Image (tube, rainbow, N blue to C red; front, side, top):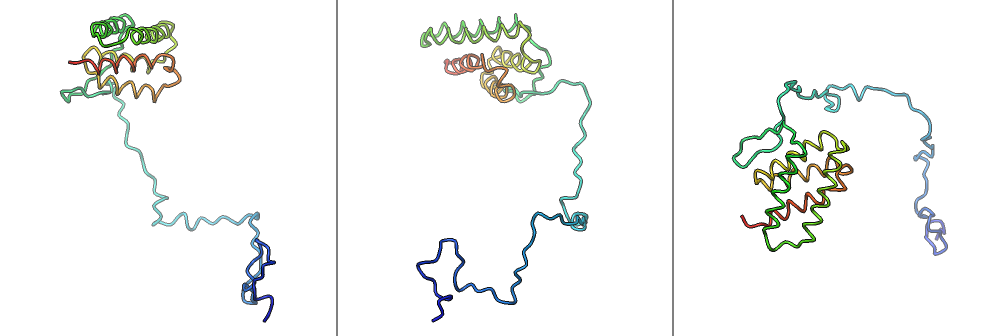
Length: 187
Protein backbone atom coordinates (compact mmCIF):
# COMPACT_ATOMS: atom_id res chain seq x y z
CA UNK A 1 0.00 0.00 0.00
CA UNK A 2 1.33 3.38 -1.00
CA UNK A 3 1.61 5.70 2.03
CA UNK A 4 0.83 8.79 -0.08
CA UNK A 5 -2.65 7.49 -0.91
CA UNK A 6 -3.60 6.75 2.66
CA UNK A 7 -4.50 9.45 5.16
CA UNK A 8 -2.74 9.05 8.46
CA UNK A 9 -3.28 10.57 11.87
CA UNK A 10 -0.06 12.52 11.47
CA UNK A 11 -1.45 14.77 8.76
CA UNK A 12 -1.82 18.41 9.63
CA UNK A 13 -5.24 20.04 9.75
CA UNK A 14 -4.40 22.21 6.78
CA UNK A 15 -2.79 19.55 4.58
CA UNK A 16 -4.58 18.63 1.35
CA UNK A 17 -6.03 15.13 1.21
CA UNK A 18 -3.48 12.49 0.24
CA UNK A 19 -5.62 11.11 -2.58
CA UNK A 20 -5.63 14.51 -4.31
CA UNK A 21 -2.62 14.06 -6.52
CA UNK A 22 -1.88 16.74 -9.03
CA UNK A 23 -1.90 15.17 -12.44
CA UNK A 24 -0.13 16.46 -15.49
CA UNK A 25 -3.31 17.68 -17.18
CA UNK A 26 -4.12 20.15 -14.36
CA UNK A 27 -2.23 23.36 -14.73
CA UNK A 28 -0.29 24.56 -11.72
CA UNK A 29 0.05 28.05 -13.16
CA UNK A 30 -0.83 30.67 -10.55
CA UNK A 31 -3.13 33.54 -11.41
CA UNK A 32 -1.71 36.81 -10.21
CA UNK A 33 -4.58 38.66 -8.60
CA UNK A 34 -2.73 41.89 -8.02
CA UNK A 35 -2.01 42.54 -11.70
CA UNK A 36 -4.16 44.87 -13.77
CA UNK A 37 -6.26 43.43 -16.54
CA UNK A 38 -7.04 45.51 -19.62
CA UNK A 39 -10.59 46.83 -19.51
CA UNK A 40 -12.93 45.77 -22.25
CA UNK A 41 -16.39 47.24 -22.33
CA UNK A 42 -17.87 44.67 -24.68
CA UNK A 43 -20.02 43.10 -21.98
CA UNK A 44 -21.25 46.43 -20.65
CA UNK A 45 -22.39 47.89 -23.95
CA UNK A 46 -24.58 45.03 -25.00
CA UNK A 47 -28.09 46.10 -25.88
CA UNK A 48 -29.68 43.29 -23.90
CA UNK A 49 -28.03 44.36 -20.64
CA UNK A 50 -30.74 46.08 -18.54
CA UNK A 51 -28.11 47.65 -16.30
CA UNK A 52 -27.10 49.96 -19.14
CA UNK A 53 -30.52 51.43 -19.77
CA UNK A 54 -30.85 54.96 -18.50
CA UNK A 55 -33.91 55.53 -16.37
CA UNK A 56 -35.08 59.11 -16.41
CA UNK A 57 -36.87 60.27 -13.25
CA UNK A 58 -40.36 61.68 -13.66
CA UNK A 59 -40.52 65.42 -14.23
CA UNK A 60 -40.84 67.57 -11.14
CA UNK A 61 -43.65 70.06 -11.19
CA UNK A 62 -42.53 73.60 -10.61
CA UNK A 63 -45.83 74.90 -9.33
CA UNK A 64 -45.67 76.86 -6.11
CA UNK A 65 -48.79 75.28 -4.64
CA UNK A 66 -48.76 74.02 -1.09
CA UNK A 67 -47.85 70.40 -0.55
CA UNK A 68 -50.57 68.14 0.71
CA UNK A 69 -49.19 66.73 3.94
CA UNK A 70 -52.03 64.90 5.59
CA UNK A 71 -55.40 63.66 4.54
CA UNK A 72 -58.08 64.42 7.04
CA UNK A 73 -60.85 62.10 8.17
CA UNK A 74 -63.18 63.17 5.35
CA UNK A 75 -60.57 62.05 2.76
CA UNK A 76 -59.92 65.53 1.45
CA UNK A 77 -56.29 66.59 1.45
CA UNK A 78 -55.60 69.33 3.90
CA UNK A 79 -52.93 71.78 2.91
CA UNK A 80 -51.03 73.38 5.72
CA UNK A 81 -49.16 76.22 4.09
CA UNK A 82 -49.71 78.68 6.93
CA UNK A 83 -47.28 78.51 9.80
CA UNK A 84 -48.90 78.99 13.18
CA UNK A 85 -47.33 81.58 15.42
CA UNK A 86 -45.96 80.59 18.80
CA UNK A 87 -48.86 82.43 20.43
CA UNK A 88 -51.39 80.31 18.49
CA UNK A 89 -49.50 77.16 19.43
CA UNK A 90 -49.51 78.31 23.08
CA UNK A 91 -53.27 78.76 22.93
CA UNK A 92 -53.80 75.30 21.43
CA UNK A 93 -51.41 73.72 23.94
CA UNK A 94 -53.14 75.28 26.93
CA UNK A 95 -56.54 74.26 25.57
CA UNK A 96 -55.35 70.64 25.28
CA UNK A 97 -53.71 70.74 28.73
CA UNK A 98 -56.99 72.02 30.19
CA UNK A 99 -58.70 68.95 28.73
CA UNK A 100 -56.14 66.73 30.42
CA UNK A 101 -56.39 68.58 33.75
CA UNK A 102 -60.17 68.17 33.75
CA UNK A 103 -59.67 64.44 33.42
CA UNK A 104 -59.20 63.06 36.92
CA UNK A 105 -57.23 59.96 35.94
CA UNK A 106 -54.00 61.71 34.88
CA UNK A 107 -51.24 62.22 37.43
CA UNK A 108 -50.08 65.73 38.18
CA UNK A 109 -46.45 64.72 37.61
CA UNK A 110 -47.24 63.69 34.02
CA UNK A 111 -48.83 67.07 33.36
CA UNK A 112 -45.82 68.85 34.85
CA UNK A 113 -43.44 66.83 32.66
CA UNK A 114 -45.47 67.65 29.54
CA UNK A 115 -45.43 71.32 30.53
CA UNK A 116 -41.65 71.33 31.07
CA UNK A 117 -40.95 69.74 27.69
CA UNK A 118 -43.36 72.14 26.00
CA UNK A 119 -41.55 75.05 27.60
CA UNK A 120 -38.28 73.77 26.11
CA UNK A 121 -39.94 73.68 22.66
CA UNK A 122 -41.37 77.15 23.21
CA UNK A 123 -37.95 78.54 24.15
CA UNK A 124 -36.21 76.95 21.16
CA UNK A 125 -38.91 78.25 18.82
CA UNK A 126 -38.65 81.77 20.31
CA UNK A 127 -34.86 81.76 20.07
CA UNK A 128 -35.05 80.71 16.38
CA UNK A 129 -33.18 77.46 17.06
CA UNK A 130 -35.66 75.36 15.03
CA UNK A 131 -35.53 74.96 11.28
CA UNK A 132 -38.43 76.05 9.12
CA UNK A 133 -39.36 72.44 8.31
CA UNK A 134 -39.46 71.56 12.00
CA UNK A 135 -41.57 74.62 12.77
CA UNK A 136 -43.95 73.71 9.94
CA UNK A 137 -44.33 70.13 11.18
CA UNK A 138 -44.89 71.28 14.77
CA UNK A 139 -47.42 73.80 13.49
CA UNK A 140 -49.21 71.01 11.62
CA UNK A 141 -49.18 68.81 14.74
CA UNK A 142 -50.82 71.51 16.84
CA UNK A 143 -53.27 72.33 14.06
CA UNK A 144 -54.35 68.67 14.03
CA UNK A 145 -54.60 68.64 17.83
CA UNK A 146 -56.81 71.72 17.63
CA UNK A 147 -59.02 69.91 15.09
CA UNK A 148 -59.15 66.84 17.37
CA UNK A 149 -57.37 64.70 14.78
CA UNK A 150 -55.21 63.03 17.40
CA UNK A 151 -54.05 60.11 15.24
CA UNK A 152 -52.90 62.42 12.43
CA UNK A 153 -50.99 64.48 15.00
CA UNK A 154 -49.33 61.30 16.27
CA UNK A 155 -48.38 60.28 12.71
CA UNK A 156 -46.85 63.71 12.11
CA UNK A 157 -44.95 63.39 15.38
CA UNK A 158 -43.39 60.16 14.09
CA UNK A 159 -42.38 61.88 10.84
CA UNK A 160 -40.82 64.70 12.83
CA UNK A 161 -38.81 62.26 14.95
CA UNK A 162 -37.54 60.52 11.82
CA UNK A 163 -36.63 63.70 9.95
CA UNK A 164 -35.23 65.93 12.68
CA UNK A 165 -34.48 63.73 15.66
CA UNK A 166 -31.42 65.63 16.84
CA UNK A 167 -33.23 68.95 16.57
CA UNK A 168 -36.31 67.88 18.55
CA UNK A 169 -34.73 65.44 20.98
CA UNK A 170 -35.01 67.75 23.99
CA UNK A 171 -38.78 68.24 23.82
CA UNK A 172 -40.42 65.68 21.54
CA UNK A 173 -41.10 63.32 24.44
CA UNK A 174 -43.45 65.91 25.93
CA UNK A 175 -45.33 66.33 22.63
CA UNK A 176 -45.62 62.56 22.31
CA UNK A 177 -46.91 62.22 25.86
CA UNK A 178 -49.44 64.99 25.29
CA UNK A 179 -50.75 63.20 22.20
CA UNK A 180 -50.84 59.82 23.96
CA UNK A 181 -52.75 61.20 26.93
CA UNK A 182 -55.23 62.88 24.57
CA UNK A 183 -55.71 59.54 22.81
CA UNK A 184 -56.57 57.90 26.13
CA UNK A 185 -59.27 60.44 26.93
CA UNK A 186 -62.83 59.27 26.38
CA UNK A 187 -64.43 61.14 23.51
